[in-house]
Length: 266
Image (tube, rainbow, N blue to C red):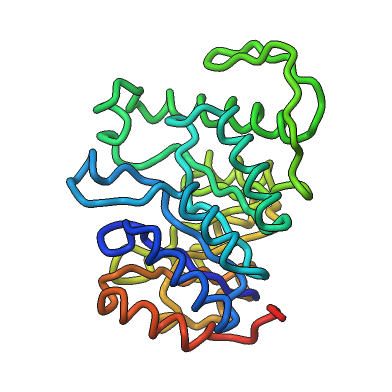
């Protein structure tokens, strides 16, 4: 099992400079992946939130080894062609250290306050079509697409990513698991703000009907038997980190302690 972290890029970490500090500390301590949220919390709850693409671009320049990604981007409220361009640019900036975490999105207010659809089924359809379009654009081929929600009229993305960008899908529903199996990675929403909500048995039951190459569990290692999660199929432990853990100083102290298991980062 490998070890990364998911940073709640809201409140104190709505400042992208603090996100960069966290990424640098995490890399120095041996964490192997660094994910940030993709929210408009200022629209939904009044809390500050950072733009993930700006923050990850800065992190890409401030680090050299750690994988970088979103956990997760609500693709239905973004234009797929812009996301493809952002991923390609981040790949070039980071030397290919990018993972794309995607899902349908959570709080409806982050959609509906701007006139975007809040219905789950509509967003699921937009996600599936959007993933197909992002993938096609990142392939480097000429894309002709006429779908229910998006179109591409004979376009070819340039420049291209350094290497293929992994797609990891968020969500715990059956459709999300099927989607994760199709794209090769699952970002399991395994915890709330205080505790792990999926047991190793839960994980094993969810992945049993499908084949998923990478299972990344977002949770709290201090509450978990990591060996049991690994036996259940978890390939990445992604530590759930927010400023509720003692503010910025507390988070940086936690990250500096390093991952809870053996790291592969060199």
